Length: 447
Image (cartoon, rainbow, N blue to C red; front, side, top):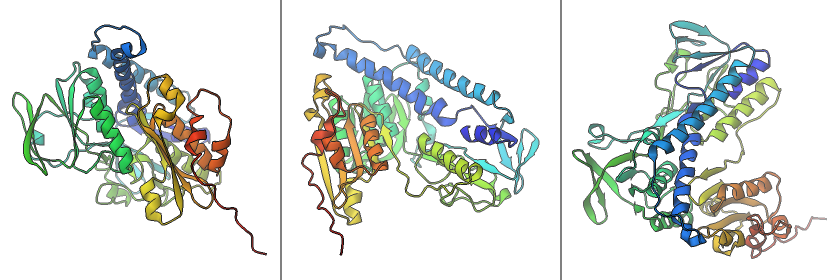
């Protein structure tokens, strides 16, 4: 949507074609509704812990209808704001319907033909279903339908140990469900360092989530309950639950676009290849966001828009090369990540150091009784610049963003180590985090 507004404001006659709802995945079935429900689950968690803070709260019960309605109200508000901004943008026409290419620069929408010299494909993605025997014969939930439940599941089985499965797993555990997470790989959050993934698993287990690693789902059976036949090093066993969440990944929404009509093809997973400027192999056709094989985050899709805007409207030469990709996993406490992991730094062969400190050493975390997790930063051994960070702890996403700002400005770790931050804040933890790291030796310029 932001790109269509930018184009219209620049004087270009613009059509925005939307199949289902304005705002895409993020506002309607992604970031906005899930984080709204995460907030409800966190409040339930804190209410149960009231005695830890000297506050007697009594029994806690969950009204899923109210949780759902709060989520729906916020989604409706956000979507309505987007629709209003579109309506107030001269030169921008919103067309509700499904677009399908009928020629190189033409497409059919609602029986009408549209032609444009510039076409931007940003159709997003959807939850995928793994090829597991019996899955199609039993009722299952995905990241969209699980948010429409009107009652707390008795036992939620979760297939997948990525951020979607973990956010919903912890959420429904806090709502009162028994939760079992089944992960094929040796650890949760497969892109993270082992110590980060292990700490996340410990936090979930501490809250009562059963986490099964290196466990394959052989088949799924229905009936009065849902039965997963799983296999691990210990052999086969049966898991029984009331509900099944499939959170094993997403696929791009490209299969219904009839891309060959415009001269485009996808890779074997359905993604549209582009160059670093987001241009496809067809002149004037661009692919942005989740339909190209890149990080599937709202903020990356928005940055894709800025790249296209800079190049088409501002005479720039922007590209995806070298951009940082921050993200936050909204478990509680949060996991904020940016830049190189320790494993990636080690594989690169470059000199580096690791700064690591438990959140139990952070005064502010102790004061609010949230000491779980740790802070970790990877530092270049020659320049002292921060190469990456993983902050698993209270407001981990916000602390990660502070380190990202330092990375964007090429600020060496010594500046953070020696900075004066207000006390008691989470930010002052950087003073102690970087204290053990050796300063790089000064470079001697050749005569």
